[in-house]
Each structure stands twice: as structure tokens, then as C-alpha cells.
Image 1 (spheres, rainbow, N blue to C red):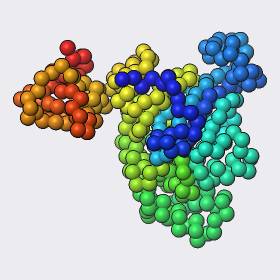
Image 2 (image 1 turned 135 degrees about the vertical axis):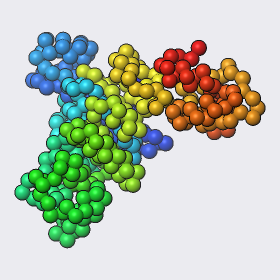
Image 3 (image 1 turned 90 degrees about the vertical axis):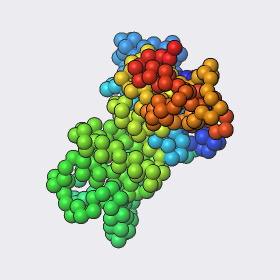
Image 4 (image 1 turned 60 degrees about the vertical axis):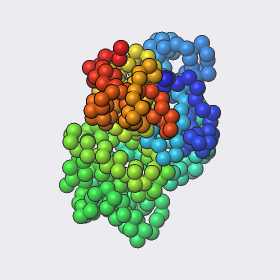
Length: 358
């Protein structure tokens, strides 16, 4: 099983045939006067970023990237510093103007939007949460959260009612009258999150929002995002350089390197079937038992008793350990009503020891 990207669904298709919230096709962002030429010239497109820089003086931040984000999905874009992930997410909203390619939001071409239409999309359809909170220091928590609604022209009563609702949602009740400099970093980021939620956008975009926070606060904020997603079902695009954060939050993960897409997949696909040595090195320190499911280690060449216990193929190996190690022999791994294989102690112990089963 491989998660390497070979074919990307055609624009306008999504899970179960639904139109994806975001559909990105052949997106380029090249900084420099010859940017458009590079994106269109096959002889230049095939060069490395260093070669393009040497030949043209241009910087290729995003290179021919295509992907879909399904409605209600948490889609993580990750890579090391300089990989192009933050530039990519800004291209999705045209905060940075793409050099070439197509970006569809709910089927509508953002690249063709007029300035007025683009402003309306940013106000109503999508919101961003940044690493640096960007709060207005002279405004209270309530006023910061309500600011986007004020820009929209909502009435004072409507602004206060909605702001109070999302302030309660993110756990800031009682802090409505405080100012940003009276809050901790984690609380300031909650204000930024509440401000993004206040306009009830279809899509939330997070650009490394927790990277400046202390580890414990960061963990709390990750849990908060998971809770909010469970409660609200919003489509979320999350930028991070932290693999553990990506695995914790993402339904699927896109890994970038030098501006290009290397692999898209679920966490277990990236760990179980890395597309190349770069991804393999990226995920090498991940405890496989915490990510992979029984599907990845089930064997068809084992014999199991007729009354053997059964576990779903989608059971995370870590959670299956007590059942497998406590059984007299191999257990059945089932996908629905179908037995797809068996797993015994040797398979579990080999994985824990980071060895391949014999």
C-alpha cells in the first residue's frame, strides 16, 4: 500500500463525489520578475530551485502543487522551515498572489475573483489564525473578537451576541473586558481563534498558530482545536513543521520540500509507506505502534484457531497489544465481515522492536 501521489482527482471532485471545499491545481508561486516565464516554460520547470535561482535570480516558493481538501476535513500541510508551506496557504487566500495555477473554493475560482469579491470571501467564507496573534492592543477581548463582524457592518447587538457565544466556546468566559497585554500567550491565541470563528466561516486556515507557545499550552490548544472540530465540523487547513502535531490533528497530511509536494496521505500511510527517503527520514522517529493499524501487519500465512478473537483492521496497534499478547495464538484481523489476515505475538513484538516481522 502506498500513499505516494501519482494521480490527483480532477478539479471539482471530492470524497463521495462531493465538491471539495478547496481544490488546488498546478499552483506556482515564483518570486522575481521572470516568475510567469518559469511556470510556463517546460525547460525551466524541470530545474531545481537552486538552478532556477542561479539562471534567473527567481525564488520558487511553491512548485506545481495540486491537492483537494474535502468538506469537514482537517488537512495538514507540513514541512521544514523554507519548504513553502506558509507561502502556499497564503496563496489559497491570495494574500500572496499565485504566479500560475488554479484555486477553487467550493467550486468557485478564487483566481478570477474581483477585489470586492475576494474581500467578501475573506470576510465570510474563510478565516486565518496566525502564529503572531495580531490582536488590537487598545481593544478588549470582546472588541477583538467582534472586530471582523464590525468590518462586515453587523449591528452592535449582533456583534456582542456572537462574540460572547464564541468567547464561551473557546473557554474565555470572564475575560471579555481584559486587554491583550493582560493575557497569557495561550489565552491570546484563544482570542485569535475566537475572532476567526466569530464570522462562522466555512474554512479555517491555521499558519503555525501554536509554534510560539510553551509545550503544555501548545498541547492544550491542540486539544482545543480537536474539540472545536468535533463540535463544529469546520474544514480546517493547518500549517505546521511539527510531525507529532500533524499526526495528532490531521485527517490527511501533505508533506512539502523545496516548494514541491512530496506525499499526501493519512498518518498511517506516511509512516507505513513513505514515498521516498526524505519522508522515511521525516517519520523515522515516530513510534509505529502508535500510528499504524493492524491492517499494516496482518499476515495471510498464519494459522489461527476457529474460535480466535477478532479485531478490526483499523485498530491502532498500540490499542491491540493487550488482546494480541493475551491470546493463546494469532487473532483474526477483519475488515467488516471479511477476514483479511491474522496477527500474533511475533508481529507485535517485531514492530515494537522496530524490526520487520520475519
